Every structure is written in structure tokens, then in C-alpha cells.
Length: 113
Image (cartoon, rainbow, N blue to C red):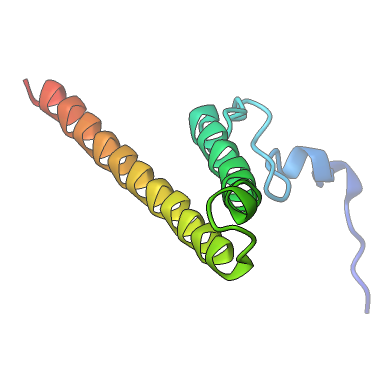
């Protein structure tokens, strides 16, 4: 035998849950700050540009001027320059990570005092 539901006592879907899915509740402010700082994006774009321009530019500048048409040496120099750009990016990223850690330690030190 079926039971009769009392609709007037039930809550609607909007009354039941003010937090639907992964969206924040209506009373909470959503965080719209970018996940990655702008300075990091600019560094990445600069090194991406350098990774394209420096090896290709070094090849075309040196193939006729420095190596007298020997494309093997010019290609090897271009590969070396690509590695120099890559190592530079790694060093900049490591330095930035260390500065972030030092800044966090300074903030923790100020909180303790």
C-alpha cells in the first residue's frame, strides 16, 4: 500500500541545499584570484620566446658569418644555446621558489611574535 506524501512539509531543491555541486554557497565569496601570479606567466612567456628565437637566431647568424657555411657546427651551437636557455629557466625558477620559501618563513616569524 502506498503512502501519501505531504508536499507542504517537504523542502524544495533550493531550500534543501544552498551548495550545489562544486560552486560555493550563496553566502560565501568566491575566490577569483588567479591560480598563478602574473610574474610567473611573464617569465614563462619570456623564456618561451627565448627558446624559439635564440637557437634559431644563433644558427642563422653563425652559419655563414662564423662557421663559413658549415651547418653542423651552427646546428650544434643552436642546440647548446637551447640548453643555455633551459638552464637559465631552471635557475630562475629555483631562485623564485627559494624567495617564496623565505617570504613564508618571514611571515611565520612575524605571526609568532
